[in-house]
Length: 479
Image (cartoon, rainbow, N blue to C red):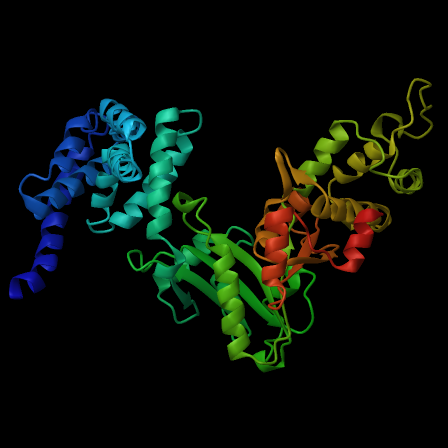
């Protein structure tokens, strides 16, 4: 019993000594990482018992981490080549085809499944046994994703690794924790680094987001206890928020959470690139809705305040493609009145060249949106607002992802619709930051999470592509 109790600590210390030595070797970059094939096979052989196998695996991980770009590429390709034995697979398939009874066929299929499993799966599992091994694999996949496109071998390796990570990071294994101002400084620093929706500018900004009328929750894995996987920031407010600047205002008075009637999810961030394609967001939101409902019985509504990150790109593509009807003639006249004359003919007394053709309403909209600080021009803003509101409603309610019938074109809309939300309200001037104007033309949208309707909405969207819409937004989209 005493040996079992002491062994993990001794092993970890031994591994740290070994990996320190191999880090020095790996500093030579590509030379140390030139050939991984034999070291990979040695790790699979398991000579010397479990401790020796773990030590060799730790060495290999350290050499990879210290390798240069070419060395890491060599490692990934050597790992990808640890595939199923083709002859054994062919023989097992022939056994399935030749089976003469249900019992024989079941046994043959079991043999086929065994020989189809590539040796690299065993090696990937071995990496989880070393210190920080789970984080190593998550980061390994992040790098693999950058290289796998168009490469059949690396794509197959990614499929294997993603399948393993999906099992290891099943939501049943994850821990939901609240992050507040008393959390470790190292964790708060990671929160700042991972925030990609609304950048955290200062420690004061962070403190404001963690105040008593705010909540921040994150999923953690027991093998990565200090690394958030995904986190959500929540504001407890009165009424449905329509502008993110109000939520991030450091000078705004702190609201007594017991006086709030709405929880606004205003920032959701995936933290680990290597877990792309493994969804936690739907579970996170539903768990947080449940927690907040239990803590604050006064909350009546749960909604997001979300960007529309694909809207400006989509609109630009439609205009460039020459689509007509995006802007009505009446709206075009309003734009023409609000816009200054083009520079080429704007000089006092300059004649209007006969060859200058009238701009289309769509071209006028494009000229309005490329103007610097166009949202500071009140007349221009009034002319642009009804056009953008209508087109954004169409984009959210109707437009489909290319080649994906029934799937919303906007990635954030797809995320929330998949989770069972309803598209509730569009907000003009919701985010007037540089990023908000560039990606969403300043618009933001509220997605409403009605606990009584979440499953119904989820099934309708996932099964039939139905997008639940508030009546006002549906009318706006049809306009």
